[in-house]
Structure formats: C-alpha cells, structure tokens
Length: 267
Length: 328
Ligand SMILES: Nc1ncnc2c1ncn2[C@@H]1O[C@H](COP(=O)(O)OP(=O)(O)O)[C@@H](O)[C@H]1O
Ligand SMILES: [Mg+2]
Image (cartoon, rainbow over all chains, first blue to last red; front, side, top):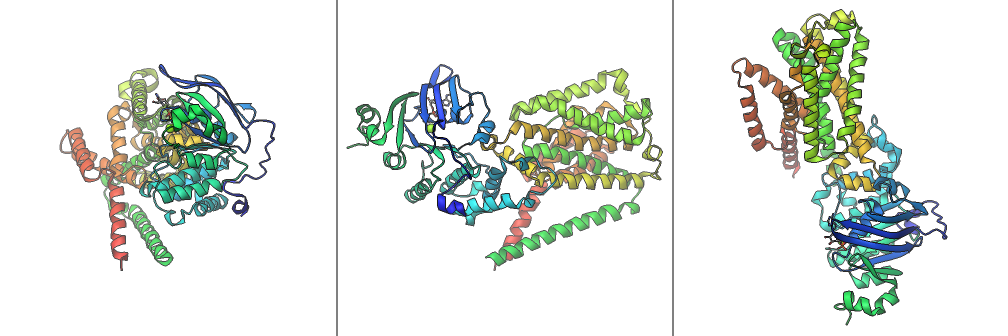
C-alpha cells in the first residue's frame, strides 16, 4: 500500500548514509582471452543516483553489469558495494546485499507461470526457500507479495500463463518485476526497452519513472531521449573504457561523444 | 470468466481425486485375488516405482540427469546385507543404517556432482556409477564380489511381525511406496521444490535473485539419495540377497528410462514407467533373452509416440478434452 505512494519496490527503512557511495569500481578489468572487454574502469555511484550507461555495441556495457552483479569474475580490480568489498563474492551473495538485475537477453523461468516466476523471486532471499515439507501455498505473505507485483505491473490477466507463451513485451515486464521482487538497493537494468514496440516502450518508461527514488538505478540504454529523460549522470563506454562521464548537459555537448557515438543522432 | 475457471478447476481436482481413490482401491483390493507370482511382480514394480520417483526429483524437477542413481539403491541394499548377515544387526539398525549410508553416499558424491551441468553431469555421474559398481564387484571381502551376499533374513524373521509370504510383504511395500510418494509429492510442491524447478529453468536467473544454487542442488541430491535408499532396503529384504547386477550401467539406464518413458517432472509418470518396464522385463525375459533389444525398441517408439513421456501425453490429452467439452 505504501508502495503505491512512494513507487515500485520501496524498501522499508532504506536510509542509506550519503557518505558511502552505493557502488565504487576501482580499475575494474575483464579479459576474454586476448580481448579486453572492460579496461580499468573506475567510477563511483551515489545512493539514489540514476545513472545511464551508453556506448556502441560491444563497448563492454553488459560485461560491466555482469562483473558488478557477480555473473562473471573480474580479471583485475575491485568492486565495493555499500562500502564493502564484494569482488570475491558470488552473485547470490551480492543479491543478498541488495543488488538485483535484469538481463539484456530475456532470462526468465520459461516453463513456469508468470505468478510462479514472481513467487520464486519473492522467496529467493528468504529462509523459506529451504522449507521442504510444507506446500508453498501455506506461505500467504509471499503469495500476497507476488500478487501485488503482478498487479503493479499490470500482469494480472497473465497470472497462470507459462512465461514462454506471453508476448515479448510482457516478458520484459516480468524481467523487471523479478528484479524488484527482492527489494534491491541497487538495480541494474540492461536495455529493458530494446525490441519493444512504441507503446510498450512508453509503458516501460512510465514504469522506470515510478521506481522508488531510494533505489540506485544503473540503466543501459541506447536511446538518447530516454537516457536524457531518465538520468542525472551518464557514462559513455567505448572499447571497454570510459570515453566520457558527466551530467547530461556535459555529455550532450561533449565533442568526442558527439563524434564517436552521437554523430548520427544529433542534427 | 471467473466462474468458468472455478468449475474447470473443481472438475480437474475431482478427476484427480477419483483417479487416486481408484488406484488405491486396485492396489489394496486386487492382490489377494492374484497368484503369488503376480503379487511378487507387483511388489517389484512398487519398489522400482519408489526408486524411479526419487530419480525424477533429480531429472525432472532439478535438471540433474543422474546416471548413477542406482548406486544409492545398491549402497543401502548392501548395507542391509552386510549389517544383517555379518553383524547380526536387528531390523531397525539395518533400516537406519541403510538410509544413513545412502545419505552419506549422497553427501560425499554430491560434492563432486553438484557444481557440474548438462553433459558433464551425465559423464561424471556415469563415471561415479561405474566406480560404485566396480566396488561392489571387486571389493570382495566386503561385498562378496560377483556372488553377492545371501542370507539376508526375511522381514518376518527380522521384525518378529507376522509378515510371512508374498502378500504381507506386498502390503508393507505398498505402505512404504505410498509414504515415500506422498513425501516426495510434498517435497516438490514445497518452497524448496519450487526453487529447484526455478534452477532447472534458469540457474543464472535464480542465482542473480539470491539463491545459492549449488547448495540447493546438493541438498536435493542427498534427499533423492535417501528415498532411493529406502527402495534399496526393501529390495534387499524382498530378494534375500544382493549382487552387483543392480549397480551396473544397464540398471541405471533402465532406471533412467523408467523416468523418461513415464514423463519426467511428474512423479506419477516415472512410477508408471517403472511399472511398465518391470512388467515387460519379467514378462519378456520368460520368452527371450533379447531383453535389451526390446527395451531399445520400446525406447525408440516412445520417443516418437510420447517424447515427453506417457503421463505428460495423457495430461495434455485430458486437458484438451476438457477444453473441448467446456466450450459452449
Ligand atoms: N562470455 C564472453 N566470452 C568472450 N567474449 C565476450 C563474452 N561476453 C562478451 N564478450 C565480448 O566482450 C565485448 C563486450 O561485449 P558486451 O559487454 O556484451 O558489449 P555491449 O553490452 O556493450 O554491447 C564484445 O566484444 C563481446 O564479443
Ligand atoms: Mg549488451
């Protein structure tokens, strides 16, 4: 109910101290064989920040997200989350600390229903997931939370459909809903709009705008208008390196960015 | 719309309930009318049905296609044999010892298999299965090698209860089968079981949501091993002896086939599959020794006729029929 007022995925009592950055990367590097996909990236994200990552295909954006969420191990460098070094932690441990993510290539539980997907996401961080001898239907509070998410995302009609049978646009919604089910403090969204129709893009856009302001959000997005509307800060990656970083005005007027990345879009 | 959904739901539940009652009535009421050969065959079917359901937890619900599952069955059966013949252990010690050894084997082997996926999982479990078979075959002082171990006391002698003859043993088996089946059904519908399904669907998604997928797979492997051990204990008492033949590759492949023929991920299917395979094996080997050839043929037919298993096929047909009849 309070979720309605403050926005999606509101965390109770999320008073984050402003002194510690939400996320700090120090010389973060990832090599795939001879290819340096992420090259010595250093940056710092403040709590509650809305930060967009841009850059051409193959720039290393998804790899950077995979490193932050713990999907793949870093070759070198450090990842500090809420003041704590998490470089060596597995992805499930980072999730427990408050990271959630969506995947660029839809990554859901295809043969389970929309509701089951959400339910599993809701119980993923609770100890309930270890209960073996009670039916899941006994856990009313989890069922309720899953139902809430379902309604918040307008997926009520699709409740009992296997996720593999619903439209791509709805799958992308489930993708975001799953990431919010764990009530994250840091949310990584990898191209949530890609491949959506214009009306679907619009509703996703509204969804993003309604996110709880206390959640720090990193967004990978190609569309300049969406990026500028969403973010306070933008980082442009190119060949694994930070090409430019700054507020949206700084990025918009940066000649290097215009030349390499925006040349086609602007004017 | 809501109304229609509700009605459909209740007819589904009613059919399920009616089916269950019918099956129980047959399993309880029929055997006294049968000859002891058929009672024995039914007993064997139920033991393997329990075993196949425990494998289904791994294959169908978690996506761990284990080729060494008969190993747990064997470990428990050998434990009963060794404890009862060499150490004159009583029934309860044999029962608990068998399960404990199965759980222990699961806890140890699970360390090797729980982090491996797909084809590698098949390979490593295949290798582990061979090792277990090798142990039973070659560790002669412990296992009696090729001869196995005979002289396991009958359930009657061991428990002191009036359980002589095939029929009482059948009812004991039926009880254990029903108990294990219910527990497994509860297990797969529990939060833990749901999480396993999630891991089967997408491990990376589940771990990014915060689930230690390794731990879940590991615990699941042990649970499945425990249920397989119960089947192994029944088997030891049923036969009165144990030998390596139930640990070899053919046994594990047959077991795997029971699960896929019946329909992985349904529990009911693998129990059905076990019944069919045990029946065919007994029936056919009375006439020919080309059992494997026939098994292979059945397998190929099954792939064409019901690639996702007989029970899944039946469920789909039933659902379609319901949809047609519920249409105005
Ligand atoms: N698992 C992988 N193995 C090898 N190379 C990879 C892998 N993942 C990404 N790459 C390479 O790393 C580079 C960056 O990829 P990616 O991070 O997906 O870019 P972006 O998301 O910015 O389009 C690309 O050249 C890609 O081919
Ligand atoms: Mg990408």
